[in-house]
Structures are given as structure tokens and as C-alpha cells.
Image (cartoon, rainbow, N blue to C red; front, side, top):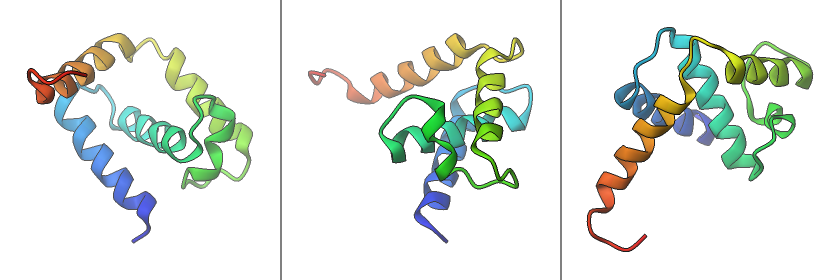
Length: 97
């Protein structure tokens, strides 16, 4: 198992636990976007494709997939973000951030 698959599995488990999803593919795409950001140390989707494991061969395919996810009306990005941030902050307790 590659380090990316360990990271994918951990993110997948975490994201399914703390957010409600209408479609499992939404979680999968978010996991790959997060892996892309972590590995590339960039926030622009154009650099993520190298780190995504899928049948798509062209980086444009990955970029389109990520753009569709970000503009998908069925995904409430703000709600997911707030849930994940609230969970992360709850672990800090009274420590200074």
C-alpha cells in the first residue's frame, strides 16, 4: 500500500464521520483534492492531477472533476467546512492556536 492510499483511507474515514454526504463520490473527490493540496503544497487544482489515482489520463480531466465538485449545488461546501473546522477546533480545547 502506498503512502497516498494510507492518506486517502484516513481522509475518507474522517470525512465520512464528520459530514453528511448525498453521494459517496463527493467524498472521494474531496479526498483526492485534499491529497493534491497536501502533496503539491498548492491550492490550485491544476497541480493536483499528478497525485490522483483514477482512470483519467489527462490532467484536464482531473481539473474538470474538481471544478464540477466545487460548483455542484448538491454539495454544501460551507456546511462541510464548518463541520470540519468545528471538529478540529474542539480537539484543541483551551490551548492557544
